[in-house]
Image (cartoon, rainbow, N blue to C red; front, side):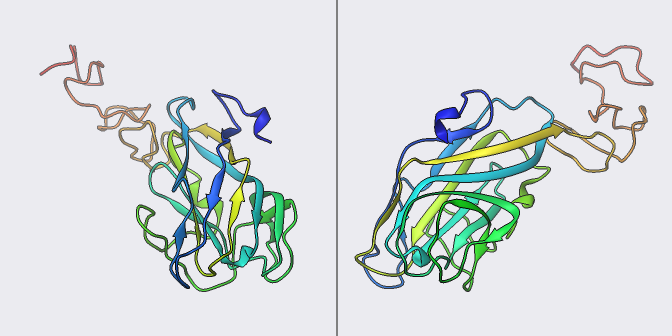
Length: 231
């Protein structure tokens, strides 16, 4: 749980409760409070990218969980549906739910209990009120692999349907993340890289550590006799 979270490493936590209100009218999504709930990650070393990710809700309760939609948005705007139209109309009480690719889906019309589940959407695509990004949303947490880990991770939660039915995520949520060093030479410009031309050969405009080879960058690149970081 969140008691084990660290300030400078995973799991990253936001222990503040998330209140899920009832919509003022049918089919008018009611944003949770706060909206979004944010975990700010700042401690991952430079030149690292996300290599794996799971998300845990602590103490999720709702009278009608089928009405609750959640989407996770990463620092560079990648967005993944965690759950929608799942769990039916049976009360869920203080469930600790971990989302992980490859796990079983949340049941469609069966009571939710604590456990590990795959991101699940049993219904048609659902939109979220601003400032959440617009659809489409990815279906797997692997969509975050290779992206920047540092920055704001935002959890958007809404109740999209029934009135007079409320809920909470009493203990907040956690982000369990693994990272790996960005691989220079794979022809993908990853966090911490200025360029990546698919090789580690210096002198071709992109260095062996994926920095641009230009006069004035403060590095004596091939074919330069000096570089004093100005032009």
